[in-house]
Length: 315
Image 1 (cartoon, rainbow, N blue to C red):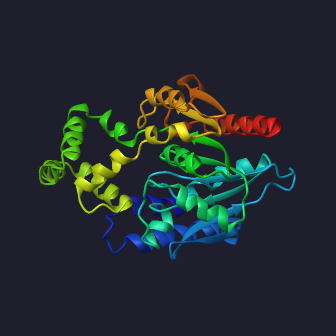
Image 2: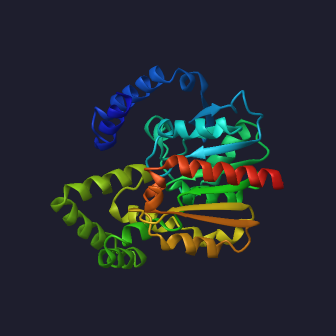
Image 3: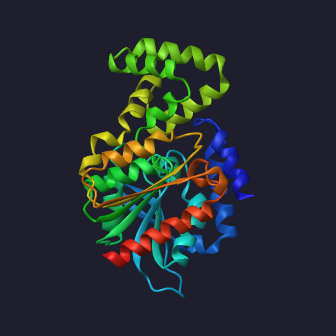
């Protein structure tokens, strides 16, 4: 029932009066079903507002090995990731699951839009919980946000990108190369009116595109399609990949419908200063070829915990 409400809220327009009550209904139902999550909820002060978090201690049966910061991507909610956190906790890791700007309640309750400088909310989380060293694990667009945080936050010892995502605009370009070239040209040249006219016309013809752009502008805090395209183009790891000095694990699906598979090799090659780089490409034979290994998330979690255990032992 909770996730039916989540699905309904997801497709409601940002200005729809039913959107926030439907989100509240989702959280209420989720907490009713998962009382441990309700008890573990807390908030992190950030820019005069707050970021929601859920802390999952390492399972009683396993000694705590390390802290893992776990977060989502473009439009995921932390409740959707709670089971992943439980699996990592069972393996002996304390999980700090949080929502940054543009995500979940940080967007809906605090009005915080997503910005590229992910190290700032991460630093707030680390400060709040007095964490001196951790692994950061970002899911979906989190595969771009997590390495961004690691490039500027020395308390991060390891980075997991589930999946890799080194350039957000490239994900859109892979679907319509001609349109992407036109949008990039208009964006680079500052042709705001022409870009807005082009996408405005397309939105009137295509209800799905209208929803996608409206949703994207809401998450990013963009005033119009021109700003949203600029925001998309700003989300790229090439500007900071050489600053990443941590151990890095890059996961990818061979048939990911969102992230082109060439981003795996491109990101691995760009991590020239990393202590180590491990890549794992999941295939259809493993039922893990989709985005974030939906179809066999258990396999991805085993790969991550094995990698965490090996790196913790080496340290």
